[in-house]
Image 1 (cartoon, one colour):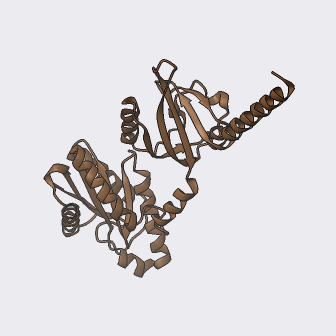
Image 2 (cartoon, rainbow, N blue to C red):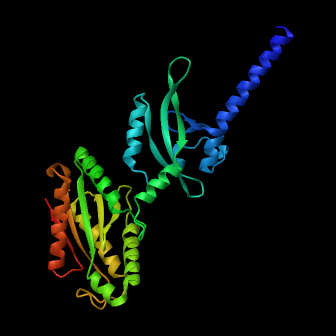
Image 3 (cartoon, helix red, strand yellow):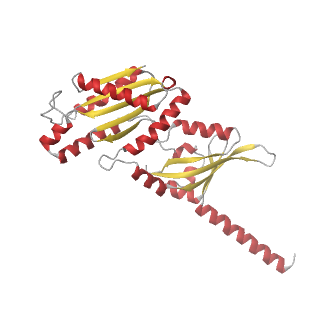
Length: 304
């Protein structure tokens, strides 16, 4: 090899080195073994997750799993890549300091020189800003929980998913008792504070990844969830009703209690038994009407 060839070879090596460094610094990538244990992590992945490379290596990828993500997404992910197929989707991940970021992910199998699968590689694109804009559009400006717009979207998706797996589908409508009288007595600013505190109480009661709560409008809230049986579903919702009364917020015009209370209508039904999501909403609304007719500050459940 002459001097010119050596020079060209060194230039090529430097170009390749610079290219690899550029990829490492800007592309959020990682590779795992067949069990999801991280064996490679790019600098970009370390930066966005807040972990050092040493903290990531030899750890399972669940180290960045965010509790908000439904379990079924990961079940679908593993089922796909285990069958040597590519998985593509959006994931919310957790940072080392407890924050979060969203990524658009492609995960594909990797093989050795003999064609034996040895693990998986993930390539991610940061979509946090996009998701934050989406969050603003689906969030109720007063209470900070999901708004009616997102309810309309998610209710349909939730309904279809429950039909697919024949889950016990539950929907609750929560209405603040005598809210107009509260506003007339204590003023609209205090009324807004009531809505915020009721929403916070409901939100803080959500403990499963696929429990969702919404402000449906005015003083009306909604919860969609799945449960093992109607008895557990009733206990879950009644505990929320009780927590709201235990806030002990004075409401002198409330016929059901000296404090702010809510009436709740719930419907629990095997998804295969209902044809239209509108029927589910109507059934919960009828139960809410009965709760009010029966004296308020109570949960009435309809079961089919």
